[in-house]
Image (cartoon, rainbow, N blue to C red):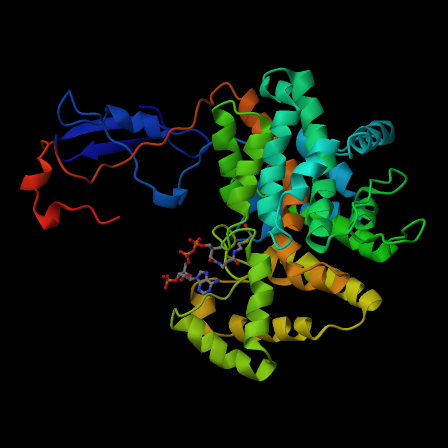
Length: 436
Ligand code: CMC
């Protein structure tokens, strides 16, 4: 018997099965041989919400949720946030290595060359109502780019794939800024390629009549760090969506639009906007204990707390707390941070949160910084999507190059009716009426 295996005894039949262990896991398909009758489908695993199922092998991001560790391509997130630029990290995530200076310069130039949007895309944006939520605008506009670049469907061509990866990374800040300016009827500002990735984004967001917008260097750097922290997070809901859509060989624009739609949910990237709403609802520090009681009764959730993978402090939240101090040195004090710190203090000393290992996640502090920098809450999730597009594309490319991957198609455990036959309408009883 292979020592690197487990033995399963099926007490229904008395049969034993040796299941090989690879990387400390078993392949779900190895269970299919376990049957009572030869015509059975065979044993599956049932795992709603993928609590304990690996859907891929990946070399991009490593998380140890119990220890609070996050690494991109082996590098600790703390080192990357301190020493790199966002585009340097984007290169790392996509290509596996930190680039030497010459390659980095060429990469940055390549991205900058693609920052403009086709003029028809600008017109498309004008069709939205003035109060359209920026995430809806972003999702639709990214999907619409699929019509501008029809060759993007050749997903197995490495040259074409690389071109569209660069286009998406380059155009995300432009789309985001245009969504924002559309809400206020402000003229769109064209990209300025003299500026860094984040300074150019701030220029497109906030330039008014001055001949040259000058972003505060501290704020531009903090935004760059925030983008690094949000760039990838292995198989989360939106990345899984990206891989799933991409597995049908859809083009990267519609795949990213789908991933962004998943991100927009309040349990995922939409949580940063919800944290600010929650702090507003609580109103003042003295109201925090009563709010915590409501959380414990299950009436509301503490937004920005808890994580499927982290059962320890989210390392990104720790860096964001540090970045918040840098921002407040420029923008002046913000009493929301006091509220958030007090909320965290009370929650982390309460048994409800201790027993469930609920800690602040990346979204708890990010919204507070974004707001202090001048971003409106409804754009926060778009600010999450700009850097996350790098992770989505890195994971999408890895999926396409993985010979084991096929179209994603989970199984189900059917719980509905057995076979039954058509009943004419005049013979149906009220109990048979489907309630829509
Ligand atoms: N407030 C109060 N209770 C919570 C919270 C919370 N934020 N999160 C989890 N719990 C409780 C939950 O009710 C459950 O309690 P019980 O065992 O008594 O039923 C227990 O903790 C385990 O939670 P779960 O729902 O099984 O955990 P999950 O892994 O399915 O959900 C989560 C993870 C992030 C969706 C959830 O923690 C949550 O809804 N948090 C608030 C939304 C949020 O901040 N989302 C951002 C996530 S980080 C950024 C990103 O990836 O997008």
